[in-house]
Image 1 (cartoon, rainbow, N blue to C red):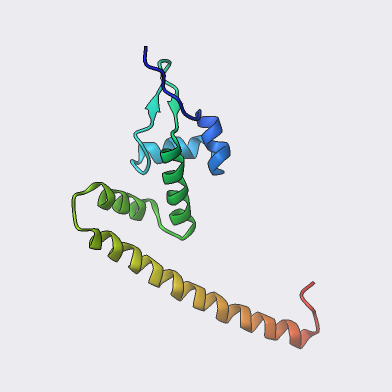
Image 2 (cartoon, one colour):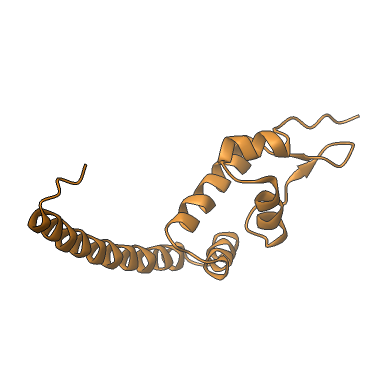
Length: 122
């Protein structure tokens, strides 16, 4: 009998900060996995699975939608040029920089208004 080591879905949820439902959803959407199963059909997450989930979570936090994540995952699994992957990430990075600049400008305006109205922000 083959023994499959790894984290249960509950342990994976604890390790990643995601819910068990989110982990199942990401697997259904093809963003992670396929996740190995033990003899009872329970998911067993490897360290590689957890590392990849961390990347997906980071990209999700950066504002990538499910369609974007699916596209990136497809690029990773394809035999295409690494430059396609890099181009995809460079475009997203440029968008994040623009968003950061907008947020920095908004914070500067708010800081000015806070100073004007005499609040110290505490």
